[in-house]
Image 1 (tube, rainbow, N blue to C red):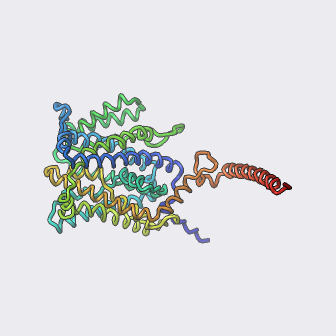
Image 2 (image 1 turned 30 degrees about the horizontal axis):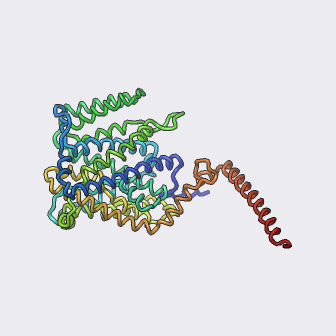
Image 3 (image 1 turned 45 degrees about the vertical axis):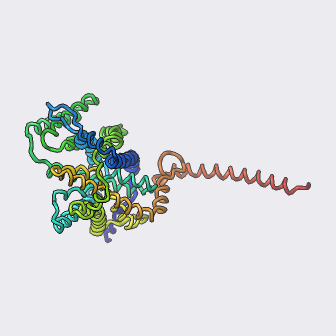
Length: 465
């Protein structure tokens, strides 16, 4: 008897209930943070392009911190190296959770989004290099257009009023997580110049102590917060970008649940820290990094200078082609069937949405052109321009399918028996169907009673005067 043909794996299929619950909670916070990020970016642009621009530069360049510890930094520097360490700490937890309990846990299931994310980083970098090879520009900024800003992308969705189905939202989040991982590696490998091995050894010892305390089950923010600050300070003085400390500590947290736990320690801490990251750290970074000149001449240079044109095309064209092409090829060769409720244009729209590269792109832009402040600001303007074009382009594509997305989203959210679990997850539960039968029987009885009253009222109206 021939062996049964294996059922093809579904791409963008329905998530498990725990994964969907986690995703909804995480993206809700990120959406709020994304709106704050958008407001902060607009505030920075207004501040830097009005008669108050002098005060913007003064505040951004103001130095504060203990010089004896090598931490006499400008406000802008504190935002980029200090506050973004919180952002990367959350990214580290996210990555750890995805690897042990999420979409990246199963190598076969993880292959497709990982290939898509890597293609979505390689193609923008290639686009940047080609533009600058032809135009004779600097290749230093090749990494600027490789990252996706999940918070900004979600803010665009919130502004558009588009509720994506959970599978598309999970795909976007997984892309961003893999993006963050490789952006971290790029920062660590390509933007580390001189190393202070004593400080680096101190940071490594601090991380070892952090890990040991976690293994021993030691609790208390008063233990971990001072230790985290020490590790961050040592990492900064080592010459390695200080945000790497945040990632390393995030990856050390346990993100699997033991028996009797409703949340793992990593999930609990992420729940506490994510609002701080999305609502304060990232918006403040945007406030002190996004303030660039947007005059007609400056915007004109964005499309004429090879470095800036490479960033714009990398984000808008490179991201879209890279993610969509990588996804389509991976699905073809792994024989993964697309969810029948969705279509390839939906994947194309999400790929275009991933071209919104803000936080990490701005950070890499600062690191790539440290010696040229003018070019740094022009590259930042290019990041803003490219992200805006990607937002508008993807917004148009998503609006074309908004009715489909809304119907799928409402189907996923429907909970007629009001037990807190969406109905689509209870189709194999006899108890659900019994509850629904009782609800319909109660409604039927109510309508029969209303019919009797209506009939009696009609007889009274039709009776003799």
